[in-house]
Amino acid sequence: MTAPHGIQIVGFDLDGTIVDSSFELAASLNHALETGGRSPIAAEDVKQLVGMGARHMLEMALAKTGPVDRDEVRALMPILIAHYEAHIGTNCPVFPGFINAIDALSQQNVALAVVTNKFEGLAVKLLDQLGLRSRFVTIIGGDTMGPGRGKPEPDGLLEMVRRCGGGRAAFVGDSIHDVHAAQAAGLPSIAVRFGFLHQPAETMGASAIIDHFDDLVPTLNNLG
Picture (cartoon, rainbow, N blue to C red):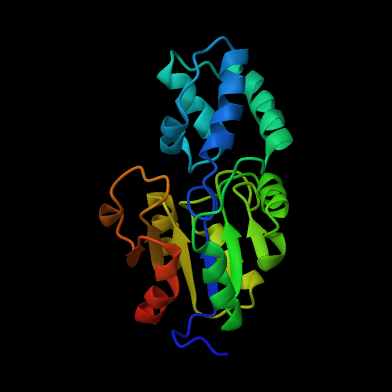
């Protein structure tokens, strides 16, 4: 079946878009904070720290409980990552409607991809744990394109299009970084209102907004 919207590639952010990883991230972040003698933070607050990678999340969490010391960040990062890797995929539900949405897109011969600021190895492991890895042509992490080239830089999205064989593409995400990366890559963006929003979805400048993954294919049809 050919997609009526004419979009041949759809890319997705991961945390806060495909999955609600806030509980896992909070557990690992708090493990690192408590190891460093810092106070834990609530899972709901962790949602506001996700989007620019694990180091940024840790730095912002430390800033909530006192000064940020670079040596402390370097010491706690491997503790955070080791805990997260050991528990990844154990408490990380997929958002409602996602599986049905990608089933519909696959039936339209749309290539699917993930572009996230999570380390590529962790993104691959998480999607593998959830049984979703094989659904994507490529998985691009925040470290895949080199230091400083994660979103909002367009490099990952441009590489996504290249790896998927080229063609019209759109990107789905929950943050301003997703929207800005898509804009810089010349792609339409769809913001999910149910994600880890740092600001109202209406203020991000996305091409469209959805409230549920049931709305994804109809929204792509409108964009097309």
